[in-house]
Image 1: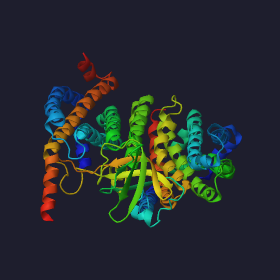
Image 2: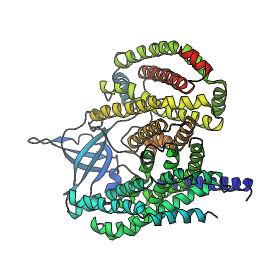
Image 3: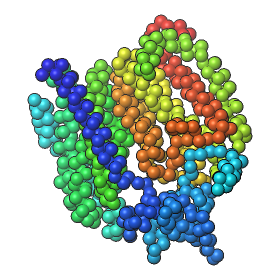
Amino acid sequence: MTPRQQRMVLVLFILAGAALTVGLTVAAFRQNLLFFYTPSQIVADEADTAGRTFRLGGLVAEDSLQKSADSIEVRFAVTDTAQAVTVSYSGVLPDLFREGQGVVVRGSWQDGIMIADEVLAKHDENYMPPEAQAAIEAAKTLEQ
Amino acid sequence: MKLPLLRRDLLVAARRPGEWLIPLAFFTATVAIFPLAIGTRPETLRTIAPGVIWTVALLSSLLSQDMLFRRDIRDGSLEQLLLSPRPLILAVLAKAVAHWLACGLPLIVLAPLLAAWMQLPAEQLLLLLVTLPLGTAVFSLLAVFAEAVAAGASRSRFLGGMLALPLCMPAVIFAAAAVAGDAPAAPLLLLAACLSLAITVLPLAAAGALRASAQGI
Amino acid sequence: MGTSVYATLGRLASPPVFYRIAEASRIWLIGLFLLLFIPGIYGALIGAPPDYQQGEGYRIIFVHVPAAWMSLFIYVNMAGMAAVSLIWRGKTAAICARASAPAGAAFTALTLATGSIWGKPMWGTWWVWDARLTSELILLFIYLGYMALVASIPDRRTAAAAGAILLLVGLINIPVIHFSVDWWNTLHQPATIAKFGAPSIDKAMLMPLLLMAGSFMVFYLAVMATMAQALLLEQEASSQWAKQAAS
């Protein structure tokens, strides 16, 4: 092969390799590649969670938080507005934990309840002062 | 056309069995440490098996990459390679194939034994056998690349290993996730993507680095 | 366009010219840094209102976010200079890439440390192994590996070329870091500012954030220029201009 032909082969090889890499990556992202499952996936049994530790992500349902009287156990429901899963947790909750807030919970099933060994709060990408938040809430109420 | 180089590297490996037998023995013995140290509960072993086997596979690849170019630099055959009219990239690929045959392939042969030690069920052993060729091929390509980049620093041992280690992490993540086996399709595809990216980019980069190192030797 | 800027800079900046420019601009860079940093840190700690959700604790973003931007920016900048040093044999570009590494590694470590400190109260954990955090950690290892590599190759040209090739291969990690929060549903929040549409941050918070980012950038330039000067003097020790400059 002349050097020119060699260079052509090299360029073709690199283009083919790049195309294959992109194709494989795109195919992978079509699959489930999840840090956590949503309650709808859990309820529809897409996640095959029986007997193993998994992560559940969603919002803490409004008015679902129950504190136990004699222990530090708390119970709450995690929802994606369509389905909900009840979670029980004994431990210190993060600062951002409150009803309506996004959480990621790790745990496993026990008698139809998810027993969590870790509760993490997910916060959104919006930053504003409390007054601005109050104004947005007021505007929403007006619309309704 | 590139076969004489491959033949030579394999011949050298055959004459000095210590260089590839030691990483292999290291691999086997280190995997055996885990049941002894952590306890022999089958559930525990099954849970940690993918991570343990892949971590140790990475370590044994790093352990055996040290000699890739060192001897060639010392006896001057690297300079001969650089002067030869054949494309350097083929020589680099031959190095990677030789490294893989000497230290990736034996791991695949040993995998059923290790799976038995770690109480890995058959379907996960199958995934291990699928991921091992892909992942160890990525390791071999990265080993050749890292040693080529570090070729100018002949005094510092294990520098090449330090360079290869972070670049190997994605392959370890995807391979171990595939063997852990809840949803193996996505990590398998990503592991294949790693290999295709590695084979596209690394031989070229390694050849460039070897050329650069020739100025300093 | 990016490469042509690098090319012009690379050809214009012969070592003595670069040395003189760096020497003259240092005092201005330090002044500019203070000019941006003092109002920035005042706004960050006192001026900006608390967040509606995270209260006072969110103020760590004024360090965390600019540091994270810098950790990526410096890497891309180093890779650009590495490409120049490979293609046009730019001596100064190679030196600047090498002089950038400590600042890049430091900003990456700062990003990980502040993220950790922020994560504990807000998420409830010091560390999670999700895509964003893991890839930032790998970035730190690549920085450290690069520094170890260029430090242990005695020949200057070999060190520059080998380091440049390592930087270019490691570049693959950068898009993974930036897009990891969009591709995987990780615990880390998605982008607030570098996204399509208006930034979703209040103006009173955005101003100090941008001031801090600007001050970090100037800080990086000052540190890089000073380290590059030292490296240049060491390398060109036998040349006439270096002897004059050092005396």
